[in-house]
Image 1 (tube, rainbow, N blue to C red):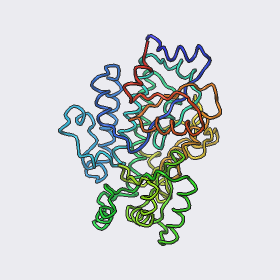
Image 2 (cartoon, rainbow, N blue to C red):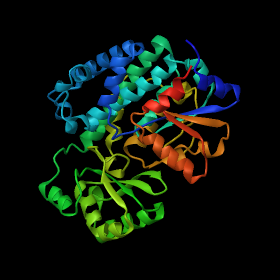
Image 3 (cartoon, one colour):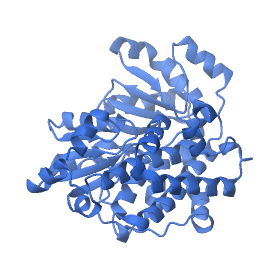
Length: 392
């Protein structure tokens, strides 16, 4: 394998990479199809992915409503007419696993085309992932190669599927109430879901409005609004039932219009990163004992793995499986903390984003801009960036 110029230049200058992985809501089918059809180096990777999905599907059973149209990614790729509707593809019980496969393919291809694992690991200062991306980051931190990589990938894929399954099980509502659909149409919004991006408020401004709405509208218990993802200084996500999000929207629509703030529903089917999901860990803990082979601990991590909740380096006394699950499903995400090492480690010259899509690379770019930093951010899902990454 010839070594990529970017890797040679980075190590020659005593600099480092930072690896990150994207999160939920990212489109994946087009990207994973392209990788499958155009990258022969990924042949064994996809064989393992398809076999693992088949095993999972047989375990759960297609009669289960959460995967009612199956997990036959191979057929979806090879015959696009067989692919299920977008509404099915975005279900957490389906998309979480498929997004992981896409970003894992991007990462694995990186190690096969100019960034041999030992050299990449030596040149990497740390890893993290946006929302579910922290699972991909953990897999990269385990840093397995060859046949060991495929075994680890299969284990992590099973872990990822059941995480998405248990989250979706907690909120197994796929049809939005007619009154909520009509209410959104009245205010000019489309495709209501349990998560919405609010862009144009500071952290303090949005927190005060969420608190006021919960109090004034008597939104308590499972109806409560929660800020679930703090993406950039003026872009955050609120998670709640669609009816609660509609009530919030109506309360502040006039103000949002005046300040030209955006209110955009995410293409997702469960309210991740919020207290609504309390109680899901207990079922997943049983899955770990009965369905999932996940022997990995913090001691297996070869690279610093940074928390998306508080930015700490996940430590030796912590249960890796529990940390990953709770940081994705229950705890809020603070992206400025997850990538905080970029603000303090001047040796990090380049961030490599493993996708899917370029959304997370843009979020990191926004965080760097807020700190007046010009660290290079390159995304494996961006054709223009690919030329820079893989240049020989």
